[in-house]
Image (cartoon, rainbow, N blue to C red):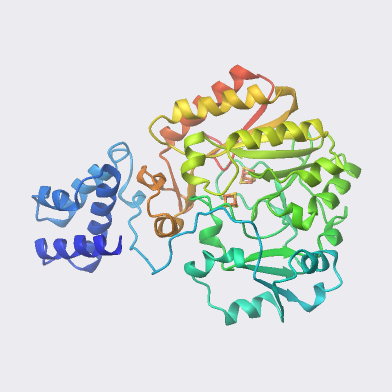
Length: 435
Ligand code: SF4
Ligand code: SF4
């Protein structure tokens, strides 16, 4: 990739010696993206350029890169950043059992149940006391290369402030008043689109040792919500809700608390099948285990280390038998050739596996990301196809599919769901009210 970019840039400099660095940089990106998307040799694309005027050259390349959306977009909607490629940035997509080499802990956790459990579960790990996570991070520079090996490091801390908060959502969208219970930070499923890879500055998994302290009514204060009948709280924002549950057993405390507090709906958002502890303790109607689902092809091509669709749906069946409600999140919906058939197959499978009366809600959200994530995805997953689609920079600094395209996606999926069940609550995540 680095070499190809160098060659494109060199050839452009020879063809357009008067263009400055920034102009060459933008054109290099456009040519690289066109070449990757359509499988065309970059030399051919450069050869096809007949104009000498920069604006005209750029316009011609934008039309080729964004054939569906060029006419609908403004100039500032095209995001053409520089490339930022390191030596070992490519993600390791082999499935791994979590078996940390190093466990870093703060002194205040040593009497906790979790710390002592981790000692027993990982006796061969190197245990190292740290003053604080903040100081550790200051002294240990973060890099994508280190992030790729985050499965080697576990941090045990006492969370002080961030256990419970309102879902940050994004400005200008129809917020559903969700609240988040933060039960950890970091995940090992290696989804190509994961926002954590651009957000996380810790090359490890962080687990809080003082969760029980925060499961009290004065700290859990969700916002009312008429659509869902009960106010909703959920985990799974900064980690998968269940991926580490056999280690943490967090679900025991959470389920016990929400069994006592039936006026709140609690949701475990997951892609995992790590439901052993949930089955053991048994659920209740207000406790929802919900799976993020996708078209099978997209799961195979993007959710590298996560369980497959059938496995998720079988886990959902087991949870229903154990007394839980279930939910599904079509998030992110990804455009690809054949997306209609792919998502229809997934919807058919959900309703074949699960009786609609057990489904609390189904959400839909199309692939979106903060603009800076684009660069991280392309270096960690250089063969990804998701970024070949046409993304436009929105009002909130996020890259999204064009509005009309999103409406088509939502309408198609909602219609299919409603054909299966008119009663299932369906909502859009992070979308404008107009949409
Ligand atoms: S719409 Fe999505 S992002 Fe916004 S508050 Fe609800 S769950 Fe959070
Ligand atoms: S399951 Fe969620 S948190 Fe984990 S890698 Fe995938 S997108 Fe990220």
